[in-house]
Length: 402
Image (cartoon, rainbow, N blue to C red; front, side, top):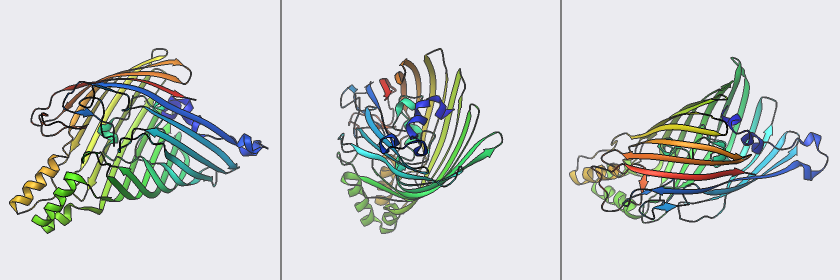
């Protein structure tokens, strides 16, 4: 299955059993992961950027190591027979352009019974299939999570608490999880290099059913979102409030509702693999509604796994209108600037060089749809929104765990 796909993923999350240990030193386990990445993008008027990254390969420089490279360390501690703690620190390219290490996981877990567990602290948000191992690229089929889907709700880590319950069902295992808290993350840095902060506060429910080679999952998230953009976007919202106070109040992102729904499946046999996800986000503010989907299929040939993946992103129109021409024109521009519709086709090849070391290569055709910039960033004035060019992204990553 998805976790069995890379057995190390389960080992990373597991800690020694304190009931079988007499010394404190035996209750701790240190492990790590990383990616040494290289990417090359064909555009000279736009960058291919990762979620919440300020730049990437392309206009800034044809080649880059910042898109996928990261390094993480994780410490697991079994504090008591039913209580464990996890601390994970990751360094990666951040919205402010730095590589400062940050705590991605810092949580306590109590196994109340064989079926029920409670967790509190910082942990990965439970929206998508790659929830538990999103930073561990070794544990995923692709070179990076497809932004067409994973950027629909760009939340990675949650500060809060959750509860999980698991049971046998229909010959498989059903896992239900519910919780809530706060997600604070940098926005995609398009405002003169500023890494504006988006804050989501709310709750989620997630269900996952696994049997044999199959895994099915679904999640629903309800949040209140706050976002105070700086630079040009912030100035535009201030101008809108002066032109039309009603529209300006509707547009402002201050404790406004946000809902996200995600569905996915994975199939992993000894030979064939397949995976697909769909996600949709709704916003009651100037933030545009988005949806995305991808489908991946591949076949193992010994230590190699070639695969093909198709992905697409959609945006869903203008919600806020004004009967004042100047305000309506400004609203249209604010929505147009969020038009991220695009599609991509990826041909990938994963090669197991040795135990715990994978070489991943991918060649991706990227086609933004007319009217926007797709998932690109750092756009130059010469970029054609009406007729965006088809671009190519080449990626070569070395993923490892230790």
